[in-house]
Picture (cartoon, rainbow over the protein chains, first blue to last red):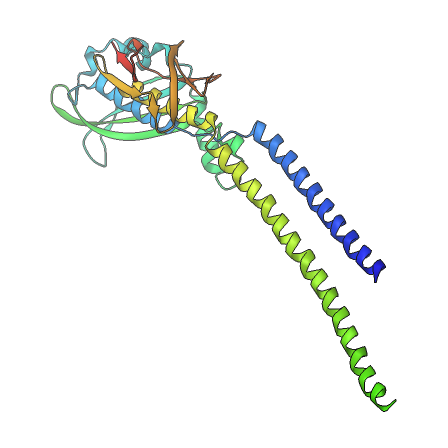
Length: 171
Length: 136
């Protein structure tokens, strides 16, 4: 009977030690991962949207644009023209102007762009491999993307559209 | 003798079942202890995860990005107030440096900050209970 009691106590102690070891290892793993893990909040697409709105307000403040009057036509650098020259390494901006207000549109009449067009390739790569790329670290390299069509009036009074596309690189 | 013969089998049966019951009780005790310990470990995990999610880093990141987005969308002449006693914690300092917003919470300033892209000049002034961010 005494041996049996010792056996029960022994197995109990072994269980407690085992659980303590498991919890110790778990805490070490959690502690180590906690150092490297930070919850990332991605606002780059919102930044792209804000930049698109700011550019539209710069190029067509009242919804009307006179393409001939812009000095941007000489350099084609829309960010410099609108006062965002310091940010051309982080943003890629493309504005395509079309005549006509619906489909089929009558044709592109002008294009302004600035920044690294390689970001377009990165965006298409992430779209093509949407199912395969699941790692959070990899997804951080996905640029923020915003694309919108705005109806505008092209001087002297023709209806038109401007297609704005803004891409934002990692911080 | 007759009496003993009758009683002994009962005694024998009683000791056997008691032994079995004790064994089962021992196993049950072990299982209960294991469940309680596993529960404690899980609770520690849950609290550690919750702590990480609500950590200073995350709160700083949220405030910095909110401020950067407000600055991005503001035009010249605008100003906005940020209360020191914020939902995300007590903000001790807001700094604008090299096109980045830095926020100090719990005595620590964030290492990287967050960039904004305003073409206007941005400044921060501190008042008793709030910070005022001005876009000029």
